[in-house]
Length: 364
Image 1: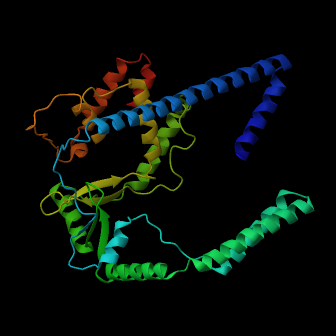
Image 2: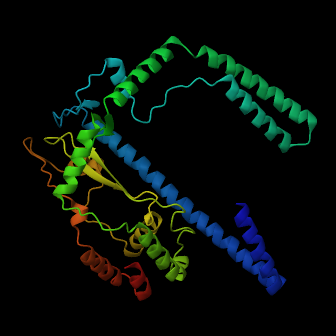
């Protein structure tokens, strides 16, 4: 915010030197009007999204009410925990895993932590005001709050908490000593426990069966330089289309491959997932996707967003009692899509939507 304010001040001073009062006033009024219009558009967009969510919620509530007496399926979900290792876990240890990978146990805050925190708070109080009485009042209020917290913090160190931490320690020890790995399953809200050697073997099998090759040299740095050259070359176009200020991360990382076990298939193969978070093209890809989506206005005619939309559409048609739903899958869909043909399809589609050939050439 300080950086932006400095830039705005510099721009204002420059305009003040080159424009008279009337011109500068008109310009500022135009800017304020454009800001208000942008705020209205953003508000209407968010309001429309909220209205849609409320409408969808009410619609599904009505569907559940109508179909509460029906039984659509005898499908049984997987257990919350799937243990594929040879290590046995107790009921309390499995209960901890059922809490999920993001669960955080309560940690008792030490008196030393509270001491450091009170010093930092006192520093803030000293800076916010010159009124001695106000600072004294704030210090007294915060002292009472911290004292009450300190008392409650000691009381909360109950036997149940100690037992939970004992089971957690036992669980982590088993995982470490038996070289285990805990992963989310590919389908469903399930955690899978398996040996790391088994996991690595499954990933290596996938790489071997799909003809991956080892490159003679690491192309990462060369690729970063290429992305940097392209963004500089098209800087005017990017600025014209409201590209983010930063299109390359300050410290980009290599894409990371990991696998999710397919517990619904024989021999539990893995589904490969390639994470492009914080890679050299992660910001640029998001911008290009938004640009192409806005430019083309493409909406799939026969697409299904998720299982909720599928049930909504199925509920609108009359189906016989013996009907079956059949799902056809494509093996390694994204890696088998021909890139050159895809670019041509997008380019031709955009050509029919816009007359801006510069836009077409840059996007493709």
